[in-house]
Image 1: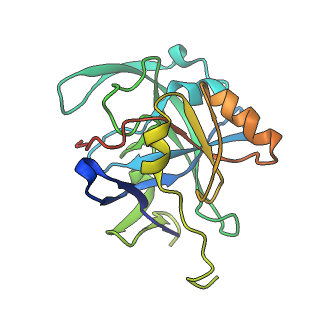
Image 2: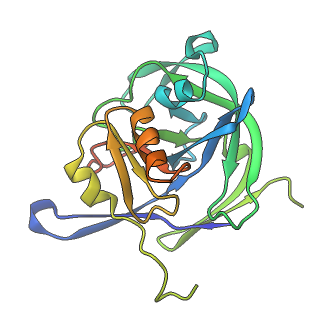
Image 3: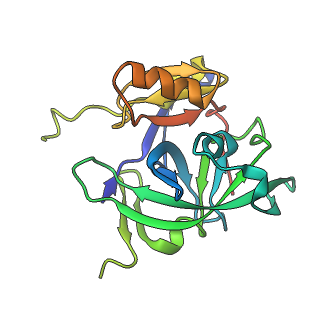
Length: 152
Length: 69
């Protein structure tokens, strides 16, 4: 299925600037309550080893965040945050008319918020929880094609 | 749907320049702003009230910053 890059138009120093970000809508659910799905917009980030989601999403889905396996994760600036892993169901679907790609995997939630300066504060889609289930083709700035690894 | 009739995806730069904190709900096709609020739960409740049970949700962020990772 095909996703578009999300456009960001702004005017730094009164100059028009357009950026196209690899941010997509995806669904996430708690296996204990599959009927409740939250649809965050997350950054597709092949440099991230884990998929990382804001804790409010986990709480909305009924996870008791701090009961998950805990680990520190580090960013490019050298800082770290503590995350808690929970098994979730992920839904990849661009349009309601398309059959979604559905898989279960571990997602990291944090009780801390993302650093204030980070331009993406909602979700980062990395290897565990995203890439290892999918074939992804980036064609910047036109589209991102996503297929299941297990469909053929 | 042909290109002319296709709805335009919302410009996040414009929305996030005005909303500095809290959460934002967009329509499922990301073409319009549905709700804002200080918590995720608040924007989900507001979206349901206007008939949208599956909005896209995003936390406000300084989108003008560049990111590496």
